[in-house]
Length: 154
Image: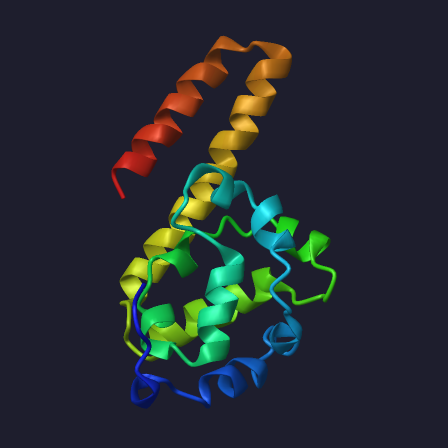
């Protein structure tokens, strides 16, 4: 277990987040874990935990949070939003953290744009796959393949 150095914590970080549109509710988290238990991303990767991200932000671990790839793993699906008993609105908090990461140059705007493109393309691939399952259109298989190749090219 890693020891936290109090001198490296930014006690204003939680207030910075809460002062931005989308971050207003995040300090009400009481770490019940409902968000992480319901999260489809946490279901497929142990490295991702919405609750852990909130805890780190509340502790003031600004550099660790904003430089972490974890804030970019969120699929923006709103599952955590819908299940949170404290109305933390984690999906909105993720948007705030992503903006702060780009503004603070913890990550380049180019990476942010590429991740947005991945998000958009993955939604398109999912839509095409669902349509394929329902209508078995052979052209749709080719379209799905094209989208997957486009994702690989990013």
